[in-house]
Image 1 (tube, rainbow, N blue to C red):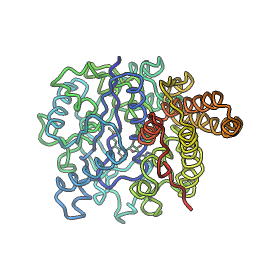
Image 2 (cartoon, rainbow, N blue to C red):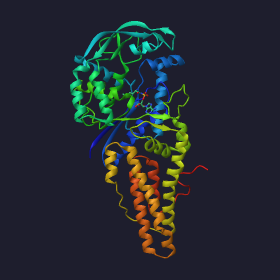
Image 3 (cartoon, rainbow, N blue to C red):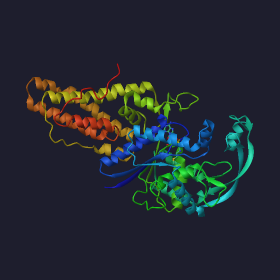
Length: 471
Ligand code: MSP
């Protein structure tokens, strides 16, 4: 038995969950369930990222005390994770006292790699942030949101000396010690790493109040990414506790947009702390809505609760794990969602269960011991985090069993009184279904559980179909 630690990115709580947020959870949960299924012990973190100016300003705009605002939204995210039946073991909020204290200790331990320096750049007082030279130029020197010219501002920041770690990170990535998936992102990251300057890891308190105070310097507050990344180990108890039982993580799930933080700053922090690097960074693609990035201004943001309420959890997980490619950007549309539900879940799987259970009951089949098997090709895909491909493979099995029934026509065997052949045929088909069902467990655990229960002797078909089709 192995001990496996799995993590998910912690979302900002300056809004409510949208369907894109489901990806980290669905993928990590599938992996967690798969590892448990093959006999391993899993620790599984989830949480919320609650500091930073964006969140602070949002609370101010709404006229709500920031503590209340983040608590309320953190609850919404935790509810969402529970609605998805994510089998996490630990939930961390970056405003937890323990986390804050541990972050400060982490900062102290990194001190030899941290220095104070002046930063000069273009700043918008309305946005309370620096913009890059390029952004300033593109906007003609005026902030489009505030119609105010950018000001040249100088501020003091602490910097993390990335140059201290570059060579070691480069080596870890190229040797596969820290695997980056999908493989094609590796090149991008290596290029970014090569060009990466030292990174600013604090802001003056006058510019950022809602964050973890830098220890031993009252005038500075930690930049939100430092405090956010640290969650993966503070939740295990670092640095108060020995975390070697669980760390390094077997897999850290993140969206492709935040891979760079996880592949450069995060390893730098870990090396600075003398900790090993995660074994795998799994970066998934983006969920698009009607072919576009979801945004409030376009008005194409899809509410995950609406999707969940439409056909329930199995349908949700089915779509996001099979039809949203694990690594590439993929599109959500209601048409695709309905088609997947009606033609695949209801037709392919729901009908198959109904047909076989009815045949078994009508012919008084007693199943007895069944030997279910996970196929080697499935295991290989799951071990390689190719979840949507593994799901496709299982679905081909499901469709194959449907074809077999049509070809073998067990009802003809019954009609002709070929009892032994009939029993053999039905048992074989059910065994195949239950093997496919075993492989479905990590993806759609609830449906898989129901199917197992249906084929427990005596076999009784469900009164209502597992998936009720739309008229
Ligand atoms: N707070 C940071 C993460 C810190 S991790 C130490 C953050 N938060 S976020 O709310 O913007 O995103 C949280 C996760 O959701 C990220 O993995 C991000 O990639 C993912 N997604 C956000 N929108 C998404 C889609 N439209 N599609 C797929 N994943 C998306 O980044």
